[in-house]
Image (cartoon, rainbow, N blue to C red):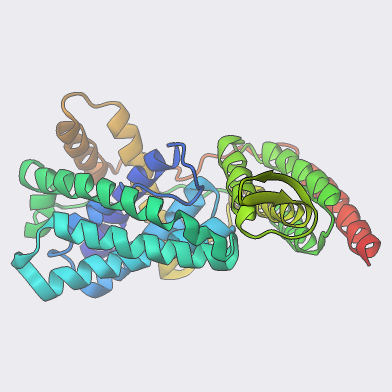
Length: 370
């Protein structure tokens, strides 16, 4: 690959590192982002073309989905909307205003546009119009965090070695030896069948059973189960149901109330989204084959990401020094194979077994509701 393609993959990998750190931070809404991954995007606004910048945005969104296991879930579409909206907004402001706008200004614009885009897509794919109740909170948090991130980006731009090397074209990136992981076809097919079955399931009881089956599949895929994100999804949907009353009143709080219809709808939607998110984890763990130039570029980004993560843990000093050292070590690494995803799926035949169970439950649920 050319140095330009390596540069694109390398920049994308730095956004993946920050996305991974942010993914571990508990949030009131699963798709809420502080915007840490926007720091590398701010630093390259003047140094890369619009085409290369667009590729970085796509690699960031897809790579983040693969690492977190959300690539085939509703969270990916929300994340993609936020990434593209903020990325192009920051690039557009910088192109139009040039040196008249600082990285802080670009960061503020990007956060505002990103939050609006995420809220709109979230209302389409998961939460409905009630999600706009959270708009004031999201916009306020987004503006505050983007101010801090813009200041951090400016400080690193002046203190760090990598931004200067990238802008001047003096950073020579070595090509790591990428070790491709085996594609587990049975796991992928079984998970795809489960995704179709999940969409057919109608009753709340069936979705509870299906969600449990999907978590068992996720365990078989050796993907870590995180309790907090799905729990926050359930809580947020239940709270939003207060603003869409439907059916018998179960309990009232002044002018708002929990109603049976809206509560059942919220729980059904939450369990369907949670089971689809768990299925996404299993599907990513099957190591889907990535073909063509685009696939190679994504694999290179993931490989750089693995090197940066490993190097960052082994460095010492201030945060800026550690970041610089980790990036420089990753840029020069070329002697040993790199596994972008180190998975050891166990008992893959269980995936077919669980897929059959999910289908039986979904068919029974569909016929029973008819």
